[in-house]
Amino acid sequence: MTTSAGPDPIAAYTAVLDASLHGPRRAKERLLAEIADGLRDAAEPYHAAGGELAAAVERATDEFGRPRDLIPECQRELTIRQTRATAARLALCAAVALAGWHTLWVGAGGGLWRLVAIPLAAVTALGAVHAGAVLLATGRLARSLHTPARLATTTAWTASVAAVTMVLTTAVLVAVLADAATPAAVLLASATAIVGHAVVAGAARSCRRCGQLDRRAPDADAP
Amino acid sequence: MKPDPVRGHLDGLLLAAVELEPLHGYAIITAVRVRSGGALELRTGTIYPALNRLERLGLVRSVWLADGGRRRRCYEITDAGRHSLADERSAWRTFTSTIGAVLDPAPSPGTP
Image 1 (cartoon, rainbow over the protein chains, first blue to last red):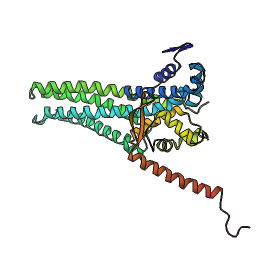
Image 2: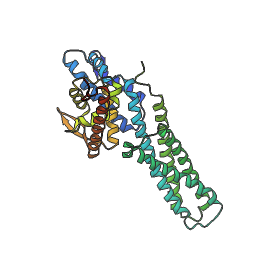
Image 3: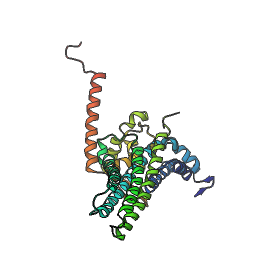
Image 4: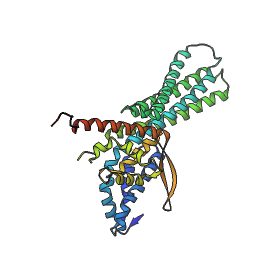
């Protein structure tokens, strides 16, 4: 959308936010749409009084806040949303992977492989426990619990480690138990590990990026 | 009133604004401004992430409502939000009466 004076100033405003913010796509789109609506509402009285839209938006921005005023709060919320999304993916994929491994090693007997596979599986399980705690602590419990500043980074690294142990555990189990397990179980466990790794590792990268941006977000009160 | 002191009470202000009816973001800003007689200086754009946070905490829920021919995301208070607002009001009254008693003490009966 353009005006007689050039590009839509509201689109330009949200484009700055869009470029600066990182987080779950839907949450970010929703937040930007609400901000665009709000800025349009704020500019409307000035525009209706006869001013150019660009000038009206500029005046409205004085009270609405410039993008740098909004970025810290917006990024903080998007970072928590991304942390929750990462935790949810980790919890789900780890639960599916653990169930898959169980079908592989049930009735497989003992062996040295257990010394490798069980600790790796335990790391994945611990990741799932961390994810559950994150979901609880950043949901309704956050009314009374302080959200740690580095929760996003901690969750990102936990998810990254769990994404790796998902693949390693499956590789160990498939290598050792392929003859004892049914081909369908091997195929299912392998596919689950690969998909789980991709989903969790991708979410972890986004979460780490959010954590970095949250720490670097400009101080809105700085001159 | 400057933004910093207001920011500490932002959640209570937003909950109070939607206490009676669901409102969209800019209507919430307008309600806060009208109730304060225009005295509250707030970077109004910052209420949008705050509303998203209140929704995550279960203190408000968002609903789509028609407003002037446009469908807008409006926020309505939840039962948990009402409890939180009651707590905020109680804490505020305690705070203002305590500080008020120090800043503006009532004269004791023996004082000339």
